[in-house]
Length: 272
Image (cartoon, rainbow, N blue to C red; front, side):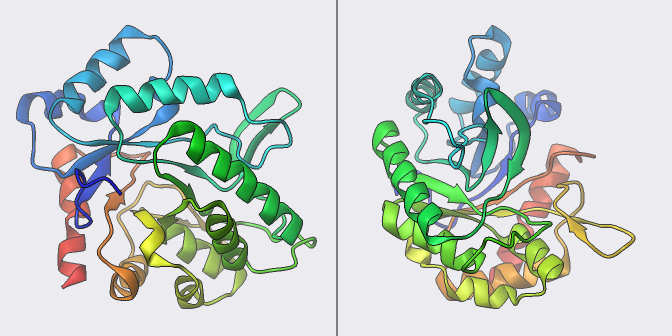
């Protein structure tokens, strides 16, 4: 990974509600992550705002629209726009999700799972390898939060995930909250998941808060502080394979930026 982002770095997701405070105070934070698609167009105002941020902080790109596991060929138009953004912000790495997001010309605007099976693993790895070579930067794949299990699966999620990364020669974008959410929804051990991860290939980890529904299921809503259970899992991950850059996501009921940074910096205490 490029040396301009420390393996100990702690960052937060950049959201528009924080611009006013950010541009007045320029607080101490190691880096920001932005949603790639929000800045891939030609709209002038978003790019002007991001230009101000990138002059002071490292920026990493996190996509939601690559459609890595979609049935159609990967979009070269999308990848070309992404490459321009990568070069413009000089992103040390780029990430997206191990999922599909559309089919037959329609975007579902959601992160949808696939069966965990060998043929799909090999196919996904081929596509991930292609993306990394195309963009010319380290490419990390994020694990999903999961709310159902597909009967066509022939392996565990972590076997599938690790297999894609290893065969592609790309990287993990490991979401600790998603591991915990899925483990509680499906009854597996989150520590078994961690033990399958090659932490030398982890570009970054995500932390976030979840919501517990009345029937007990957990939903990855990104609108609460990080739970004690997720902090404990983060601590276990750090002991397994730290250091790695750590990013706090918060996408609804977003607190003021100083509060968000303070929540992210709890990682320092948890690591100790």
